[in-house]
Length: 310
Ligand SMILES: [Zn+2]
Ligand SMILES: [Zn+2]
Image (cartoon, rainbow, N blue to C red; front, side):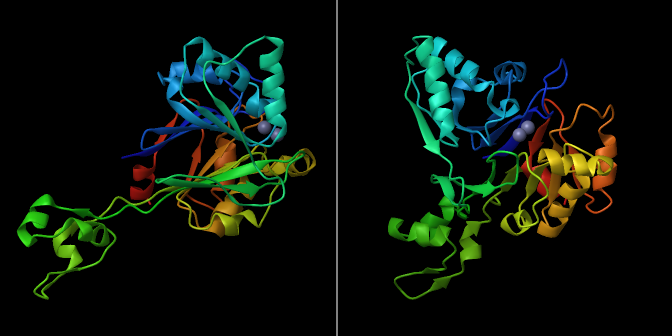
């Protein structure tokens, strides 16, 4: 049972030897969600020894190259390596034509089923849900349509000790009620308190990914109380006007969102190459929000630790 985030790339625009464009991998109980797929993402996955055939879902925030130019390469490599398992891609609708054209001109017929799911451009809704997790989109404010994502694990059920089931002779049909928090009422009318027979469940985690965006105050309401917020911080305050013009945020603006939303931790990324030392962005953000992490290539964040350290 785990909820972990790996940073595969956290720089903006042009890739460089040590500057990789946006991509992250969220591992939710061994279900792998790839979030954005900048150029070279498959190499970054190999560097981290992550078998990319295990990725089941890919979410693309928007169609600027630094967020999806690695996707056709990854799709093709999955095919060449004999993938049979379905792959689900969530994006704005134009991506389907782009990928299909690329496959078509190469006469590539994929070995595996590829499904496209459209992210709405003018509404915020649940875009994916299974037994364990719910994903919603967030409307961001960029130069083209851009979507953020909120991942919320579903509440975990309490655990019943087997010895307690035997001891109190609890029938099967009662077990899920007890796992959900009910006390047990025996056929003789005896009440056994839930806490006596169950163990606390693991806390459900949450993650918000705010890709390229201008400062948008209303985001904070939407992501209120989230465990970890990734918010782009392409610029510092000195370049505030440039941030607004190009549809990006400063580190201080990202921190204001984190502070307003009362998140547990803020992760900054999508750094402009102009800053030799991005630590200045952290210092700036910490003026309004203390718990700040700078994204680094290959960094792995375990949500259990993020919560413990809070
Ligand atoms: Zn970008
Ligand atoms: Zn962009």
